[in-house]
Image 1 (cartoon, helix red, strand yellow):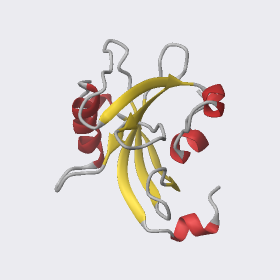
Image 2 (tube, rainbow, N blue to C red):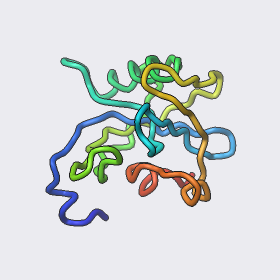
Image 3 (tube, rainbow, N blue to C red):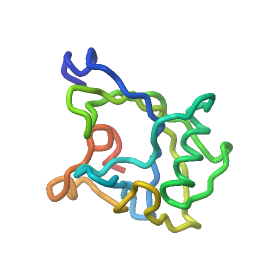
Length: 136
């Protein structure tokens, strides 16, 4: 549950992925100039659906190819934005498997990591992931 001020904060619409490895860890990325690890994904371009946004972002940020049919919608989630103080993110979240591919940092991504709940004590994890998806 979010604090009442988070629900009224200016929002940023994004698409985000829930990608897990065989151990149930969540794939997280860190963008250039930021400290928080977050789920892969990003903001839509004009005319894109949330699913199309995620397919494009996974290709651009991680070199991972997925089809629209591979995405399973988990719904829309709201959380405090990790890198924009006073804002919230509203995320269309999709689960997808990339078991046959290896994600590689590209574009604005500078670090990729697989994270479990225990990692939240050692690294900064964005509220969307920490509050909703870190536990497998």
